[in-house]
Amino acid sequence: ENQLNPTVRTLEPSATLKINELSQQLIKEGRDIIRLGLGQSPFPVPDIVVKSLQKHAHEKDYLPVRGLQALRQAVADYYQSRGLDVDAESVLVGPGSKELLFNIQMACQAELILPAPSWVSYVPQAVMLGRKVSYLPTTMDNQWQMLPEQLEQLAPPGDEARFLLLNYPSNPTGASYEPEQLKALAEVARRQKIIIIADEIYGETRFSGQHHSMATFYPEGTILSGGLSKWCGAGGWRLGTMVFPKELRRVQDTMAVIASETFTSTSAPIQYAACTAFAGSSEITRYLEQSQQVLALIAEYMVGSLRSIGLQMADPVGGFYLFVSFEAFREQLSARGINCSDDLCNILLSETGVAVLPGSDFGLMADQLFVRMAFVDFDGARALDAVTAGHYEP
Ligand code: PLP
Image 1 (tube, rainbow, N blue to C red):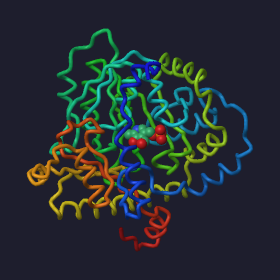
Image 2: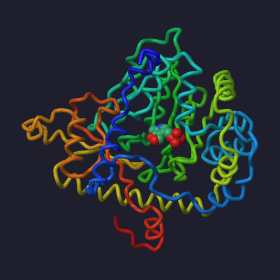
Image 3: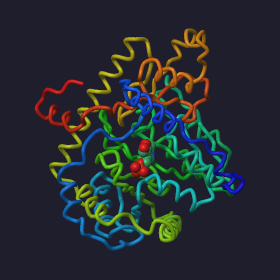
Image 4: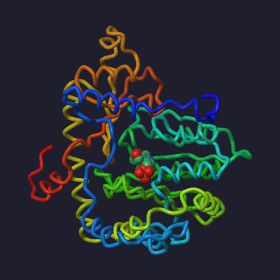
């Protein structure tokens, strides 16, 4: 115990793991569990991408540290086709965006600014590296959107670098931003000399309205984080990407050094297959459209059902998550001694068999009665077929 790294020793295993363990145990005991905990894409990897992986299974060599050149070009073309000025030089490839998000914090001595709630791993990563974290609270009534005023109210720029980690569509809330909101945030970030890491990994899963990138409005100060996990159904393949503005080339170079001394390069066959994914095709376009249709239908069904029993939530516009308030039941829950989201999740699981994650895991105060529900426990392949045939019902 004494020989463990004291910084890391203080980290608790995430509630996600605890809930999963308890779910497994209940399943072993023969209980039926509705798994709304784990957040991975319900859809299969598109056939054309799987075929590309099979074709390249023999690729065995280490690839360049920054990524296969053809893949960096494919990623640049992908962003170009979405209106962003990206060239292959500005792209880094890594084994999942999670790893790249950790490495960027390692590369820079920067304070991390986060909306609350936000994704579970940003803070533990910052803690492991001894970085300072500040939360900017957002609310359900305001669609979980951060306001430019909140950035304005931060201290004026000093010597220390600052990263705002903005994830949209958001895990856990399903919220996103419209162009004018991104523009307003960009203007303040520019004045405040805040670099924005735009975690747009759910961009292609936006099912209501259209995804717009922060890089459009703040090209010189936005680092774009993405990858195959969410839109290509390939979380387990481990392929993430990061795109840097020319102004931040030094950060990118430092990350390449970290990569060269740690993971070396991402799995070769996966990188070749990722070229096919990022290059796009009519099959992939169809896959994305159908995935969005399915997600929209399930979200609508879930939101309707949950609201009909008195729960509250903001309408999600992308991703596969709902962030649900049990505040309306605070008195009844309190009467049973349940006053925090952790206890709420435990009782939901043990009494109803529904596995969800506590809002506290995402940076809310423990006594805020919110839970995250991931709506991914269904047969994604069948849903895509059914929506194609025009008769999908959640
Ligand atoms: N960012 C967000 C908001 C996520 O939800 C996830 C995955 O759950 C990741 C990043 C990491 O994705 P990956 O490491 O699979 O690219």
